[in-house]
Length: 217
Length: 339
Image 1: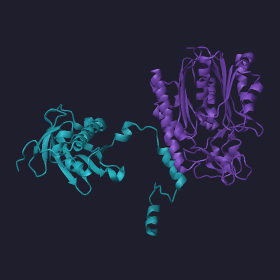
Image 2 (image 1 turned 120 degrees about the vertical axis):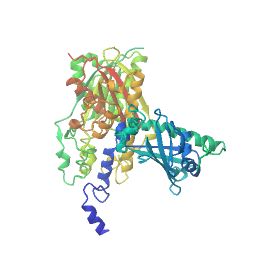
Image 3 (image 1 turned 60 degrees about the horizontal axis):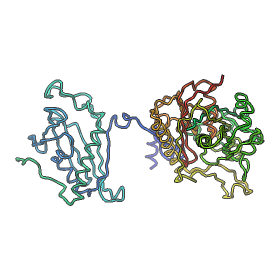
Image 4 (image 1 turned 180 degrees about the vertical axis):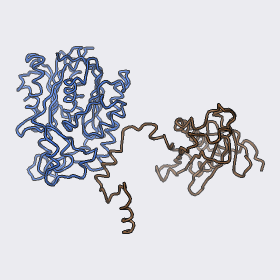
């Protein structure tokens, strides 16, 4: 502990209860608390949204981890098919004509995290990453169901397409042009996800559906 | 419906400005938070004199109204509403004493004890209601604040960070059935849920009127301070926004916003939430500290005097009280002539 403290003492800018103390810490936090926050401050570099979904967490996780369900709950991802390398899929992002989106699902059942590693136009480097997590609502809200969180980080490629040559045509808008609409667009998709899961769960239907196209292994 | 106007306002600040050092150089002064924006000490404030009462301050604040509108006109008010932040006496408010001093004979006299820092807005609403539904033609509404030089200068309390924030003063409004500076609308709400969350604390648990050694102060735990911050952040923009929606104007179209003046953080947050530039949200906190209920009329009076309010301006007055048990806002179209 002593060693740790002396190490911490060398780090400028730390605010811990030992120093400055409770009152100043509280005052500092109050100063940081505004009534409103500009959109760019909240969603400029990261876009995190969340929703409560009245569907058991295991079922919500199981639905999310199967990539073909993206065709149900996203606004514009359709027609996924295996792209060749194991685990890599390619479909269309109908946000723009003739635009292919590559996707790999990285899921962790213990943590109930589902990350979609994606990219427009090419599948070599998947840099558009959608980080999702299912949390049992019983733990955090003391009620049945799930809390689903979803974060995107503003990878530099959003602002600067590294492979303009891979676009279907030179004037095709770039995905990063939409960054400022991510909060809105992802909220629409989260609402879709919530509606699908809640409808099927409430009516005793299977939550998952079979992939629309048989996958040739 | 009869148009009611906030025809004029006037104010009085007792004594000479008291510098921040009165508190910061006091032996044993808490200095942990002195440089913190939330508790940063205003450079100056005013204190009532030892023998100065609420009625004394109201009498002095009304003098400019008498000069501008004539003694008879002021003496003829039909309505007198008085809010004393720190009542001088239990049992009886300052209202009848004010009437005696000024030679008033109002048919309607109310000592308003609710709506705290936003009571000017509430009294304007009451006056407007009486003036539109009865034969009454004119009203005087008064806010006296004398806690700073009394409660907060006590030997023990003076050391606390909270002591350096308040200031004393008195603001009054003259309300008439006319169309010169029409009150366009008033939005108020009493929020019972938050009643009683602001307390006055005495460390030995005695009733405030019982003899004892402990010194009366405002009681706040950290948790309640955080709650009050969250409520204040929400309530004032909410009532102002609702008022503007009813008027069909955007909050950004407010020419002059005058709120109560609790601290710099609230002022910043309200301005940001209502999308107004700093120059349109007037600040008297640095000069006079937190004037509690007197802040709105005093700030308005200073603004008119310094021509920060111009003919035709949409002026919005708003604020919240105590720990959030009241919030209110009103809009007037300013055409007040002061010659």
